[in-house]
Length: 100
Image (cartoon, rainbow, N blue to C red):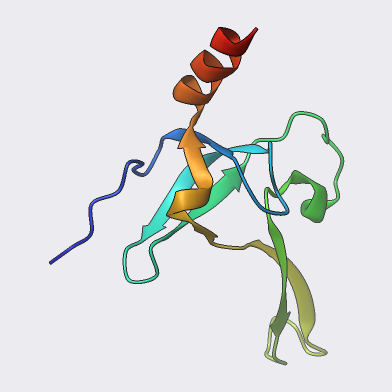
């Protein structure tokens, strides 16, 4: 039986705990077997070319030698975040507004 989560693909979410706390992103993928979500980085603070800075939770990935990368490569990819560590952005904003 598939797990039921409070977020789905395309939702705008905020990370509420962990190293990426406070960062916003859009759910790109839901991994039900790991109970995790992968976010698309939408951080407006960093419009630079640096791939790592635009990611919500960056992870370094090593690429083996192949025809496209004869000497191998290093890529910055988005790391999965457990579903309990994210909250829908509209609920987060409403909660912040009520505390003021």
